[in-house]
Image 1 (tube, rainbow, N blue to C red):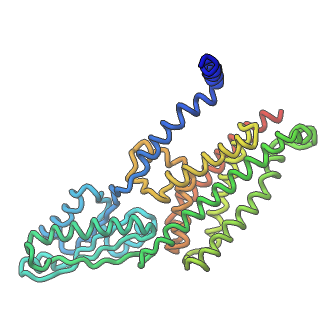
Image 2 (cartoon, rainbow, N blue to C red):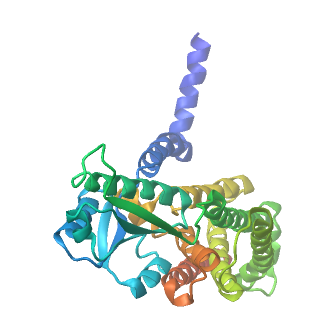
Image 3 (tube, rainbow, N blue to C red):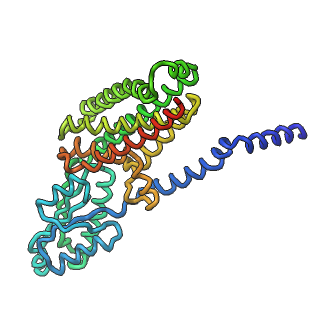
Length: 366
């Protein structure tokens, strides 16, 4: 027993001296608890709602209030038919409630009237849940005028945009494209550059008439080409296997993919400037690409349902912007003006990450 305690005591001292291991043991579990506890939220709230009220009566205002007071919807705009398409393309609203002219008169005379619900279906899981919320609210409001068991006087006429059948594949495939492309680009670049350090060839390269920036660009170009071809291959395969539509411009898709991959490659280069072994590089690359892309990009869990501090963190996740651009191009066929902020954010991320990575490598090079 004394020998066991001696070994345990020695190991405790070793762990205390090894701050990296101690930080991993203490910090990572708490980090995962916070991340999963707050991000894994299947409740959908703060759904952006727009209203096209053509009746402008006390009854129509009561119906709108029922949506807002439910706690699930945030009224962000009063629209007409022309503005609806623009807002839907930009993801500015997720649901548009169209109240027909004559709703008040129909309710007062005991006649049935239908309200139209236009739903953004680019996220099939969210759309299904939001539709359930909307139908329940309308039925509850209708019960005020025709208590059960009478037939409801306000019926729902749903129309799902971009994904009328609410097929899960059309929601999952764009997210998988971002997920696979991000992991592939970050891991391959980080491990490739660190491999040079492990093999000792980095010192030989530094003796050559090459600058740090020249070496980094030369190392990343092949991975950029391979990652770009891989991403396009995944998209084509998804079109064949899952009937993924392509409603927008291939050129815009190329621009969005290129910006996203440049940022991912820059992240891999930045990791390689910190890691000294391929194992550390692989683990770090997987951590910064896997979790944020899966959890904080809006791929699986709606960002609007996350706590405010996590929503702020998602602004630093490039997959968030890439998914907006990818779904706008592939599913909506939207023009560039509908998602240019997402492209601009990808460009800014790529420039910032590449600048930091280049500065670190240049310092190591000199």
